Amino acid sequence: MQGASAQAESLSQVLCGQLGSEDCALLQRTQVSMSELTSGSSDFRFDLSLGNLPGLPLDEVEITLGGNYTFVTDPETLATLHDFQSMDPQELSQDRDALLRFVQASILGVDSVNELYVELPTDLADLISLYTGLPPVSDLEINVRIVDGILYLELDNFSQFVPELAGSNNWVGIDLLSLVDLTAVNAGEQIVQIPDLVAMQNAIRSPGLGIAGLGLSLGGESELGEAVDVRRLRDSHLNEGDVAVFAYEFDLARFIGSPVVQALASELLLSSGAMQGSGLTADDLATASFALQMFAPVLFDGLEQEITSAIGLEDEVVYDFHAT
Image 1 (cartoon, rainbow, N blue to C red):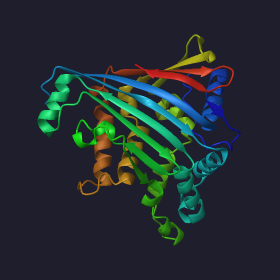
Image 2 (image 1 turned 90 degrees about the vertical axis):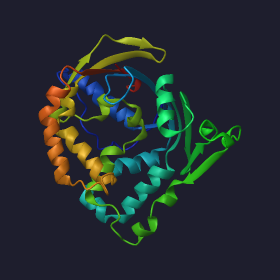
Image 3 (image 1 turned 30 degrees about the vertical axis):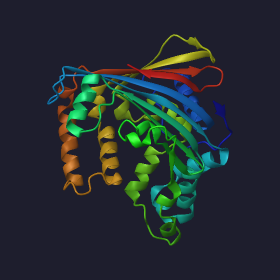
């Protein structure tokens, strides 16, 4: 990973829990370091084991999702993203030039390579095939690249569904900038409403924070802090050098029922347009959110998740994190 001297981002507080001041300061410095990376790479793998799923004629399902994400950007793009994070949504909605700079920077200023794979058990693949009519597929790879604002998707990997694509080695490109109505921005139309801007600011961070792990990107709101126990474990050593190891243990009942998580989920649903045509309103979401807060302690009682994060003691960047 390579660092850059960039403007400090308007960052949320890290989750420190009962950590001492020195350990908390290390996490805060690491958050800043990750936000200033101009290049980085992350390998990830999730092994999911699900059982007793209603309506599914399988006792247990094991699914693996993994891949690699690599990005390259520049200090100028980071500065624009940092400015966007720190702007007041009300002011940003009236500042067409700032919004235009952000849109262009987020699309043109970050190149990335995304390699994803999904592994399904044979019985689940057969079940999906039965319901969809598609050939049974247990392993699927998806390769996506974004270069100079063009999203490239490799088609050969989809030949399991469309045999005509086999051996084509073809890629299809989509101009992401053309999907954004920049003419409307320049004409002064308010194409982005305040709730949408807030959701964008919550969701879009410097690319380095995207590979920093949940402990540094969730924020330090008191409601979340009550659902997370943060501990520093014994220091370790990786190929990159000595690392400090932190563990985040999530009480899922309190975490999922947290007003902060509920508000964020509702905000994303409303701003994304996912509810359009569903007949649901913001009041309906508020009612469902309240019910989930009430019943989360019963539904998710005893469920926990632990995330560990390894931070370089010399350069203070994240080198490894995994969840169990």
